[in-house]
Amino acid sequence: MKNYLKNCLLIGLAAPILGLAGEAGTAIKADVLRAEPFADAKTAGNLNKNDSVDILGKKGAWLQVKSKSASGWVRILSVKRGGASGSGNSVADIASGRAGTGKVVSTTGIRGLSAEELKAAKFNEDEMKKMESHAVSASDAQKFASAGGLTSTQLAYLKGAK
Amino acid sequence: MKKQYSTLLLSLLITAGLLASQANALDLNKVLKDAVKDKVEEVKNGSETPLEKIPDAAPIATPATPAASAATTAEAPATTAIPTNTINWKNPSQDEEIALGRNITGSLLGAAPLVKDDALQKYVNQVGRWVASQSERADLPWKFGVIESADINAFAAPGGYVLITKGLYQKMTNEAQLAGVLGHEIAHVVKKHQLKVLQKQQLLSSGSNWLKEKFAKGNKLADKAIGSGAEISARSLDKDAEFEADRMGMVLAARAGYDAYGLAEVLQTIGQANKADSSVALLFKTHPAPDDRLAKLGDSAGSKLDNVKTGKTLENRLYKLN
Image (cartoon, rainbow over all chains, first blue to last red; front, side, top):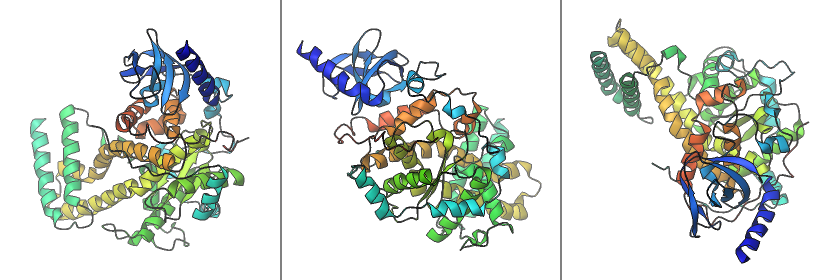
């Protein structure tokens, strides 16, 4: 009962933040499901690669998911959004009104960014100057960060996995 | 097949030995060895790609070609402080790196201009500059821009130039995701991934000309292999460079105080795109598959980010495009 309440609370807190609740996902590798969003939490089950899951919530580095056989927390980077076939718009895209925005056809006469078109591109000094005029100084960026409540923190780069 | 391969190997090893004495700052010997190795792998796997079809080094090397050639013609802008046709390719200075990046970026802008929205451009510069400040090249004159294109892609050029397409920007739902994507491009600049590719291309093409004059006249096999060495080498380098930029981009965003998983979320979104969709054609051609990138990120991160304080996502501050 206690756990049930706790889970409800966690879902309640996490889901609205990301709007992930109920979204479909797919395991991109085999991983362990944990009872809580911690590496040393009790094992709640296992995910196999390509298992379909429902994403119920998110907390820190963890997603709460429900697979056919078990429910629990799994690392964010072990799951991708969408079904295994990986096509079409996700629930989140539709829910957030973003469905199809990437396919909007530009009306400004842009030729496009295919390799061939890029090869044929000519230097545009006016646009370059415009880009330069938008540059922000490090101290202004610092102010912008502070305004958003961002503080920098130390973290080492990650080594590549074999 | 086997004979072709050993002849090729031999001729390239000789080449490598001959040219080794010329290289200093950039290890040309290693460049050529890598080129040979990759070529050999291709021949072995039977997956040899027609040379003219090999995409230029990704992600910026595609636009790099027009820029690099533009730089040697009269079209190079007079305002470029340092002429890019006199670059010391073996060991370019930071100013030369910036001048080169400016040329590449200006050419990209020739294909797709900036979105006409000053507030958007300023916003992206603020986020990008803050993330770049967390890197070991915080002193570069970083410049960011959103370009008018429905494609989903982002580009970095040497010296601190970063462009993302409007199509990609519109896929984002919070500022942490933007920070992660810009972090990935910033990492390319910090590690000089594109610069190294360009250096290799330049050094190999000059090396190849020198060789052709000396020895390889009429030797088509050598011509083919040497002439395309840079592209082949760049192609295999790129996969690792992309994975490295993903790892670094994630960490840079986290250092800046953002949720570390913004980049991963964007990769998850991109992974859902229909592969036949032209808006992702170049991205998918020049980058490893989003699923592979996510899996690599997950393997590298392991439990290392577990104790990082949960960062901010700032969805309310993400600048909304009309």
